[in-house]
Structures are given as C-alpha cells and as structure tokens.
Image 1: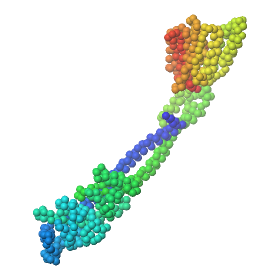
Image 2: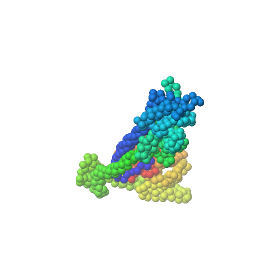
Image 3: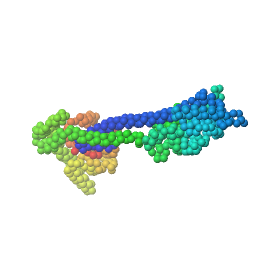
Length: 630
C-alpha cells in the first residue's frame, strides 16, 4: 500500500484538519438531510393517504345517500300499499292505466312519492321499481311505466342472489331501458339495486336507484382537474373500472390504468398494504410514480391515487438543491479555516527553520553560544513551540559534539586503511614470502615466481587504492583468492580452499578488507591440527529482506570457549552502545571487523561466531544490500 507523504507540516495539518472537519460536516449534513427527507416523505405519504381517505369518504357519502333512498322506498308503507295494487295481475288478464282508474291512481301516487324523495335530497337522477314480470315504474328523468325484460338487466342475477342486499353497478346510457337512458350511450350511471319484499318478506320485485356518474364522481374530477400530475382510479370489488367513467365499460381495466398489471395484482392480493405509499412506474412513459390506495369498507371500492414522484417531492428536490449549495459553501469555509489554522500553528516552526538554516558548518566547528544560534526574535504564544525552541538550544552543544565526533570518525577511517596495510603487509608476511621467492628461484620455479609476484603486486595495488564507498564483493573475493594462492605456495598441498559465491552477489558493495582478515585469522589460529587444512567461503543472498551473508569455515581445532564467549558478549553488548568505540591499532581482529560492520550497516550489521560440531569455526558476517551509513 502506497502512502502519500506531505512535503510540509502545514500541508499535513491542512489536510488532516480539512479531512476531520469535512467528514464531520458531511455526517451532520447527511443526518440532517436524511431526517428532513424522511419527514418530507412521511408528510407527502400522509398527504396522499389523507387524500385517498377523503375521496373514499366522499364516494361513501354518495353511495349511502343512494342506499338510504332505496331503503326509504323499500320500507315506505305508502309505497308498499300502492305497489301492491300496481303488481301485475294473473297471467292472461288485462290491466292498464286507461282500463283501471284505481291503477292509474296507484301509479301516479308512486311516482309522486318517489319524486318527492328525489327532489328533497337530490340523491339520484332516476328511481325504477320492477315487479317480477318486468313491469317497470320510473320516476325522475323518466316518469311512467313500461315493460322490460328483467332477466336482461346487467344486475339481475346478482341482485336476486343477494336477496335484499344492495348491488352497485356501473352502467352506460345505452344499456338502460328506453327512454330512461335517453339513448345516450356515452353517458355513465351508477346503479344501486336491491330486492323489494312485502310485509311477509316475500320478494315482490326490484328497486333500482340511478345516479349520473358525473355527479357521483364530481368531487374526484375537481381534485384531479386541479393537479395535472395527479391521477385517480376507482375499481369496484369485482375489478371493474368505475372512474375515470368516460372510458368504455368494455375496455380492459389494466390497459387503461396508470399502473402496471403487476402493481394492480399486488393491490388485489394485499401485498401492497392499503394507506402505504409505493413507488411504481407509469405504464406509458415509464416515469416514477408514487401510488397510494384506500379500500372503502362501505362499498368495497378501491380508490388508487397516483402522482408523479417529481411533483410530489418537489419540496424535497428544492431542499436537496439548497443542501448542496449550503454544503459546498460550508466545505469552502472549512478549507479556508483549515488553511488559516494550519498556517497559524506552523508559523513558529517556519521561523525556527529559518534560524537553523542560517547555521553552517563553521558555526558548529567554532562552537558559538547555543542561545545565540537558536534564539527566536519573537517568542511563540504556543507553549509547545517555546519548549521546542528551548530543546534545540539545549541540544546545540550535543550537536557540536556530534559534529566533532564525525570529524574524528572520518580521521579514523583514514587510519583504518593504514592499519589494514600494516596488518596485511607486516614484516613477517614479507619475510616469509621473500624467502619463498628465494627458494623457488634456486629451484628454477620461474612460473611460480611470476605468479607469486603477480599476486603480491595485485594485493598491494588493491589495499593501496582509496575506496571510501567500499568495493564490490567480487573485488574483495579476488583479493582473498590471491592471498590464499600465496598461502598455498607456502603450505602447498596441505592447504585446500573452496569458494561458493552466487553470481547475484558479485555487485554488492562492502567495506574493503572485510573478508580477507577472517581468512588470515583462520590460517593464524585455526590450522593448529595436522593437515590437510580446509577452508570454505560461501555466500547467501536474501532478496526478500535485501540482506547478504558470507560464511567462512575451517576444519581446525576450533576457538577456545573463553575467547568465543568474550567475542559473543562483545557483539551482544553493541546493542546498548551510545557511541561506536574507536578501532584498535593492533591489527584487524574480529572486534575491529564488527565495529566496521556497525559503522557501515548500522542495525543491519550481522556477525555470528560458533564452533562447529565436527571441528573448526564458522564465522558469518553480513549486512543489507544497501549500506545504511551516510
């Protein structure tokens, strides 16, 4: 995972302050928006629910008035008395208004009674009374009597099956008996019928109350006309479409409604709870619509109110726009405040930084007064900044001491190169090899002398060259091999050595003369037993951890336990060093090698020394692929 690192503290503070404030502001704004949005949605849902309830209540009132009208007719003693005389005589007899004055009187009396009820309450457009043989007496738009085929009336079977309970049906003008419908097939009527019984509860006929659909649904029409985005549908308990009533009764209900057949099925099965607003899709435009329906307990009619989601939540949309603008303004204000706060906090640091930048090497070398070097001209009002300034003042002396230590360390590195030259080319080493050259010259070993001199020359050139940045491992191993070749001329077949260094390690840079002193130490102290003497030099590379190791092994008697314990304790104690000790002058021992590793690789330096189980010593040194020191 890549982490972005800010270039300055002010940038970091600005981003962190901005992030915290922005997240907090967005959370508060989001919660407030959700609360208000839910409130608006709840109020819109309640508004649509109340509208549906109001529509249902209005339709119930109209139906109740028609029902009361029919009940007045059914239970009116006056109507019962005259209707009993109006009933058709036995089959084969003749009766008419002209033939029987009493029949005429009963007929006119019934019409007057019915007209009186209609005119007093304006509850219906027409009232018809049918006897069992189809003789109809009408009052209202049509006043008079006529014979009809009662079995052909749309409500006939259901009305007789209900046996006195009301039946409500939507009829068009063309389906009414002439001249009741006046031939207007495009006019719609709501018909309420029930069986008429005498005092002995014997069915005598049917009472039909007709109301003009325009009058019945006038309130719904006015509500819908005032809002173009609002649509109202009314279906009865049989699934027939009652409103809008201008459509043909034979037209498919699902094809004429605003909602889909799936949504209509959800309403019929109750999967959409009544009174709860649901989001549906317009059947023609596929635009989102909000729908609520209410079912009347009085009539069983279902009133479906559908409104465009955009128009219903127009206040929510305005609020969302307002919220977006307010949020953007608040975010801009947060950014400005974050910038001012971060600049105010980091201003003392900038002043302190400018003071430190003015301090050069000459100031540290001459050791000027620390208070003068780090003193702020204008102290900060922030306590932490003042404490930081005081801390820098107190650390100034330590900084100058560290600078002096660095100079001393550079001098010691130069001395180390001289010590290495002295250690490798000591008089004993030169004496032995000059003697070997003399002996080989007497025996005429010219080729060996040439090779020997070549090794000595290359070794002198290697250790004499300045290498402040170290050498490659391949160069160091080449020097080690030349050294061992010189030793092999001395010990001949008693000395055997093996190199196993992976090629991937050849380019790694290490301190010069890091491996060869280990070999010299092994030949000097590890070849005490009888020959043959064997040396092994191997390398290991850990690319995952970016570290390397060199292992040097011999088959000698091993290291004395006291000496081994002392060196291991010295290496372990380096974890607590506050300062790297000076290199010893007397040669390039194991301690000096460890100090050079610590100087070069820091905490990545490795050195392990142990006696092998089958004899000999194993020394492991290592470090990181990239040196840690400056």
